[in-house]
Image 1 (cartoon, rainbow, N blue to C red):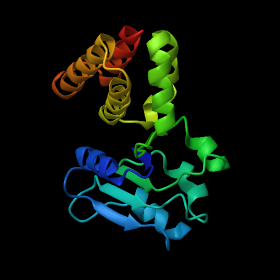
Image 2: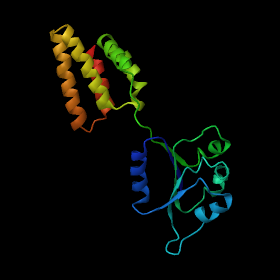
Image 3: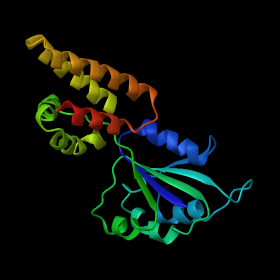
Image 4: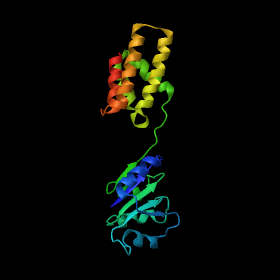
Length: 199
């Protein structure tokens, strides 16, 4: 079986590789591979084992071998291609994308502080709209970090106007923070629930 792992979060990709391949596997850098190297890799056995576990680094960036990949999709070995970037415009990618598992491991992007401020302000008037705004950035953000940014906005509100509503919001955010770190409920559901209640 062949899988492709791509993206800049090498730590999470590495954890998944160990989960699938175990602690012992072959690692091959593909920068200098040629077409004649592919059959021994995908079809060949070793002296000790007919079933191999192989990690191929930067296979798709080698333009001489990547187009050959579809010929080896039936390999009996466990093979993972670890790529920093994967060009989805290539004919080869289009040919294999529905035939093998392709998984992207992206580092969370820092959300623009102004975007968090906008979501917080909208939530005070219209929780549903704030949740819609949040859904657009959830895949690129960490819920605990996002909640920390909400707390900073709530503290600014409290400094301006130390009213009952502002105190209540800080209390609710404190409870949200504890629940995010202690419950098995999907974290974004908890954040969305907070935004809906805020209005």
